[in-house]
Amino acid sequence: MSERPALSRSAEAIRASVFAELAPRLEAHARAGRDLVPLHLGDTHLPPPEAARFGRVEQGAYDAALYRYGAIPGVDALRAAFAEHLAAQDRGPRGIEPGRDVLVASGATHAVYCGLRAVLDPGDEVLVLAPYWPLSVGVVRAAGGVPVEVPLTTRLYADPSIDPADVLAEAAGPRTRALYLITPNNPDGYVLGAAQLARLARFARERDLWVLADEVYADYTYGAAHASIARLDGMAGRTLSAYSLSKSHALAGARVGFLVAPERVVSLARRVATHTVFNVPVAAQRVALAALGSGRGWIDVARGAYRQARDATLASLQGAPVVAPPPHGGSYVFVDFAGVLQGRPLRGLLEAAIDRGVLLAPGDGCGAAYATWARLCFTAVPPARLAEGLGRLREAIDAFG
Image (cartoon, rainbow, N blue to C red; front, side, top):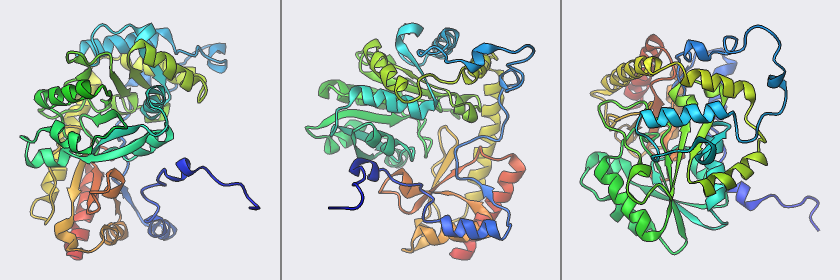
């Protein structure tokens, strides 16, 4: 008889932090009191819209509602405002009914989990377009699914004529239940075009699949046109679209995200949400509502700043033996360091970068096929700090080579 009960095998299959291997180097760097430019996390240095800042939203007299349980479905005005926001941007399915089709969640991570739990049974396979957001496959596993990685968007950068449906068909099987795509993609910024989305939609319809469309970076494209697969013929009833105010309005700390899906999906997803967070904090929802009411001006300014940061990042890598497809959107440049590594492990280069004071995210957290790649977030720090970090990275590349 064992002295300790066994742990969950499904939980053990969820990967630990992508930075676990780098932890000793990071700890030594911190102990030495050295400066580190954090280009690893997907965040922004910009403050949120002024109207949405904590302390401005709640002013004046004590408000008891902030300290009580909130409505389980979420603040009605917030769901309505978000539906209006999507309609104004031609995103998500047409004719959204806020009280029926919108789930308010504790961030997009929670929204995705609740949606997947509503449509997956244990063992169902989910085709995950790779490279992918590092948490996505863990969320699929937590929801009972089995992620099947399908390297695609880096291939599309090299050859846009590739039919994505043909690539998916090679990975699909009898247990395939859903397709998970991100556009603009995290980590490589690829924006799926209308023709590509049409092929993916046809693939989903022919195989009767659910589609989880992660559109959290939809506000940040740089010349490419974003489109929602839920708007294509026959897709509104099988598409779950995820959004996050963490990305659109710099509210990562507030943890407010949304799932827009058919009523029967939202009804089940809300049950899951109730049994995981009960209700999203009322204070956070009020901040989110203020952000949505602040207009598009803040987003437009942010997009311009992000584009400049993207261009500066790409310029800093010119002449280096790396592959860095110019991202169509999002907050990252995904860099293949194979030419620098020359067969050596990426960890050595990332440690050398840490020693010089800059941190990137290992690419294998975005898919098994990306062991020589790393993700660089160009929105995480102000321009001067970004330039400093990019200079340190270039020093590490030159010395390592």
